[in-house]
Amino acid sequence: MVNDDRGRMIIREATREDARQIAEIVVEDWKMAYRGIIDSDYLDSLSVEERHQRELQRYRQYRVAAVGREILGFTWNGMAGDEGADCEIIALYVRYARRKSGTGRALFQDSMDIFRAAGRKRMIVWCLRENAEARKFYERMGGEAWKTGTHPWGNRNYDMIAYLYRLDG
Image (cartoon, rainbow, N blue to C red; front, side):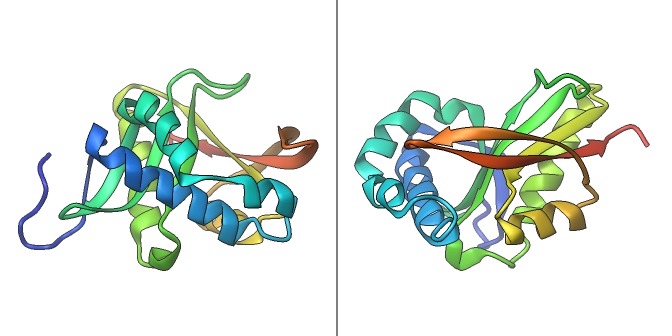
C-alpha cells in the first residue's frame, strides 16, 4: 500500500525512513503515559537518539498508520505466541496527541485481520496493570483479562496483564 495523496490515513509496512518517528512516538508515549507508573529516573533516561538506533534494527517488523509522511502510530505483531495463544500484538503505540482519533482502533483491527488471514485463533496483548487508559482500550476492543505476569524496566519489575482475543468466532 502507498501513501494516500488525499491526506487519509493508511496502514502499511514500516520503512527505514519511519524509524526516527517511531522512536519519537515510543519515547514521548512512555514519558507521557507512564509517568507515575514507571520510575521517573527510568523515564527521564529515555532518549530518542538511542531509541532511533534500536528502531533502525527492527523497523521491518512494524506496520505504521500514516498520513502522508507523518507516522501516527504503529504495531509490532508476533506470530509465535504464549502458551494458549498463537499470536500477539507485541506493541501498539499511537502518537500521544493523536490518541482517541481512531488510529489505535485501526491499527488493532489491522493486526487482527493479519492474524486471521494467517489462520491464527487466539491473540494476546500485554499491558501494564496500572495503565488504566490502555486497559480500557483493550477491554473495549473485546479483550478478556486472561493472565498476569511481570516485566522488568530499569531496576524494578512491573505488574502486567494479558488480554485474550478469540479470532475464530
